[in-house]
Amino acid sequence: MQEKINAAPTVIYPESDGKPMAETEYHRDLMIDFIQMLKHYFRDVNDAYVSGNLLMYYEEGNIYKSVSPDVFVVFGVSKKRRRTYRTWEEGHTPDFVLELASKSTYRQDLTRKKDLYASIFGVREYYIYDPYHEVNPYFLGYRLVDGVYEEIAFVDERLPSLVLGLELGEHDGVFGLYDPEHSVWLQPLDRRVNQMEDQVKQETEARQRAEEELAKALATLERLQGKSDA
Image (tube, rainbow, N blue to C red; front, side, top):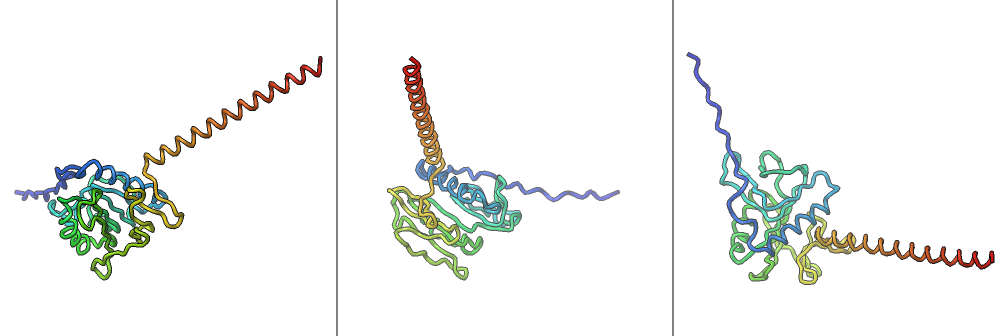
């Protein structure tokens, strides 16, 4: 009798950990804004993947070895949409991670996740920010040096990211990303849309005014021609 060969069981990696997307609406909106701004900033870089709140597995076959960074950037992989991120399949781990902290998550962000990002993932830069300023310090940044995180020093009240080529900090009380090369703050999607709508409105109004002035000029010219013919 031929021996029956059983296939190895397929490991199903969950796409959700059952936890809410973010601590508060402020955390959620800030996370979405950062993801959108970074996606727009790296839109022409084919191997720059920007995401967040996505389960990232780091040990093949073990569904319990995962973490879900609020915002992260990976260089060297495609921009394709992913249901989960599996480091052994991608061959790359995040180069940049931002965790939006709260009183309930700060200790874990500063200990377990920090150690994990340094020792297992080798995340080159790791930032922690508390939108409500309820923890102290509420904003920290670390850069990986010889496998150990060293705290990043503030420059002009912002933390420079060598990985992104941007600076993280607050502007008019709002946490954001500053582009030092062009001396501008990156704008979230909704603000960019509003600016484009305002620009279109201004251009439309300017065109209407020009058309009205042209119509008046033509009418005046016709009257003058009518008088001269008389």
